[in-house]
Image 1 (cartoon, rainbow, N blue to C red):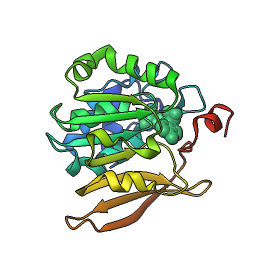
Image 2 (cartoon, rainbow, N blue to C red):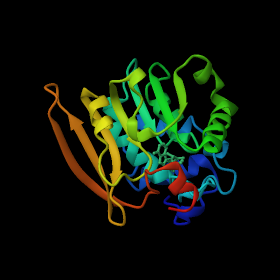
Image 3 (tube, protein in one colour):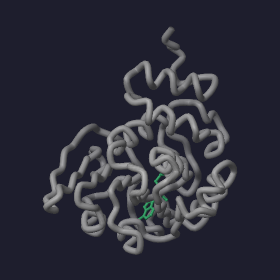
Length: 226
Ligand code: SAH
């Protein structure tokens, strides 16, 4: 039966079942990946509520439904053995979920520019997924994600967790042929763009939904509240 107390799902399975019932989770692959990463490792207050929450430093952990949308759009590109990039990894939740989508057999690079969030995200991941860090299935970098991370490029899947005024050209360059990027774009009016690069290197972009993300910006601007 549908649980109308949607935001206050009492446990993680219940939250995920509601997301499945509402059609946000469409595939077993996304359901399984989300289920294997306990949101309580990444946020201590109301981890099973379907809403974004502060992780300090003017940043938020995205709502579970946004994590689901990202994984659904990227699912065919998070294939075993491939490379993926998570820009602005914040809490670290989605970085692990992306690795789980690849059955822990790919490489996910997470970039975060606030050193304290980088450390906190790493600690969150280590609680139950230290093996992924040890085996370099997850590589964490502290730096400006607008420049991507050349050392592990090209990436079959790129997730951007903060809204860019425009799509950074370095990220388009580092997207693999046949790859896909999921990126919020805009300042006040924001939309998720799904950016595909075909096998010839041609780019196509599609706006798929309106959203509200924190900005992809300079460290200094973020720390003083934008
Ligand atoms: N996917 C993350 C989203 C965190 S909020 C989660 O659900 O937990 C967005 C994150 O992007 C913040 O942690 C913020 O510090 C980071 N960020 C913003 N601009 C950035 C930049 N230029 N380079 C790297 N990270 C950035």
